[in-house]
Length: 368
Image (cartoon, rainbow, N blue to C red; front, top):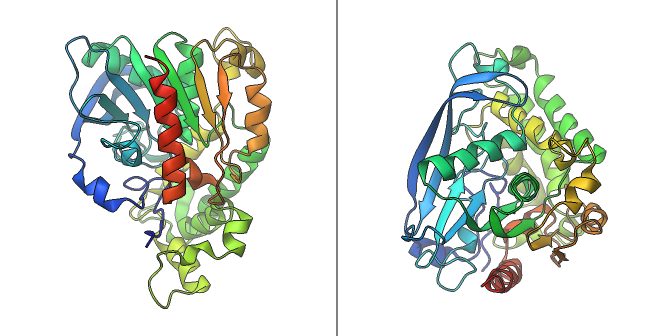
């Protein structure tokens, strides 16, 4: 029976759960690392005296250092978030590849509002952009790992945003790029959604302009409730697909209550907000040299690009992907035929896992 993805999902926590728990348990544990940078200047103009990127590695780096695949994380995720792609029968085999899974600023492990000392603690932590994250990881690869080229960059959601930014900022750094359930820019409808979720947190009296002594529990629960309404497709809800793998006795009311109260256990409110700000500010058109023109930036992409939007994704609608793809000369647009909404881009059930793994594997094989 399918494992219910309380995707605790999803969007982060310890990574997206999958239906293939047996295969996941057989995967060797990644090695956790920290890359430390001194005086890291962000696009906001603020310089962090010490910036840390946490990352996990799977497999071994070969002598030629040409077997590397980068897996940039998604919202509030850690480096376990792509294990649905890993294994001898999956798109990425750690026995052959060196997989580098990085964690975004603001997730509570990499430099974040919650773990950075003053004068940048809490609400004073600078808004970091997708480009800031890409620049930090570029330094990680080139300075710490001495890697100057990638087999591929593969990203889901905010990881897909990073894949687009890699394609624009470093057009020849990767042989192939894959973006699932994420776009090259956060369009106005996405900003409105994110602002509503930020408002859910900040309007809690306990938030205290980010200077809270205890987490604003009611605000975070309201944030989670708003998030739920966008997370899955309308038809997913109509068909009551939440019942798949649910414990006996689970009702609609208990399912929603559990998501509301346990969406991202232990999450810090300022961290949640910081990553939403990172998400909404994403726009490859504002990369230096493109004058704010997203179409011009998309036209600059040189490497083959597999673009896999979810057909029912409400965060990154398939229409946005079709709009962007028309400006990309190297793109292969392949919508994911799933009712799972946004999570479809991270293999929430066996059908999605099969579709993603098979097509990503074919795309990567074409590079050799």
